[in-house]
Image 1 (cartoon, rainbow, N blue to C red):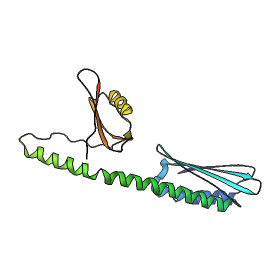
Image 2 (tube, helix red, strand yellow):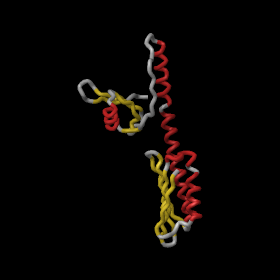
Image 3 (cartoon, one colour):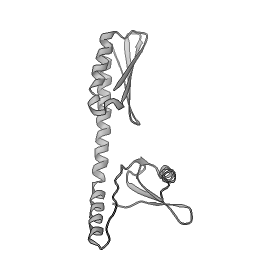
Image 4 (cartoon, helix red, strand yellow):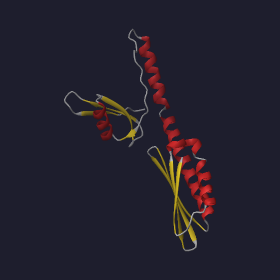
Length: 176
């Protein structure tokens, strides 16, 4: 993880810089070198404000705290960041759990097709990306496909957009 530090109204001493890198370094095991972190310290009269922003792929996590000294404010900001990351991880796990029944359904469908005289000659797997139907239509057109399976941001369900013969678009929203 790349870490940058800045300050306003105070100086970041080498011991504080080392502590910042150590504290943020524990996120390396989760995100590796793809992540960047920025720590900003601001002295406000007799308190220190710490703002930490982490960018991991296309996700941002941000923690801001105020304390009497820089070390305490840094510790509190790291706790806020950990909470946000834990919350995001729980949401992802819940989303995966919610779609587990769809995976089982699709798995049963593939087995049923294999039992017929026709064969599946190609398999493809991909990550379902959360987006709205308009964005899915745009992605479908950019890829040159006639349909696109996606995770609808509005209802958090798997949806399918497709191009109709008349040139318009259709949206399939399965109930499960």
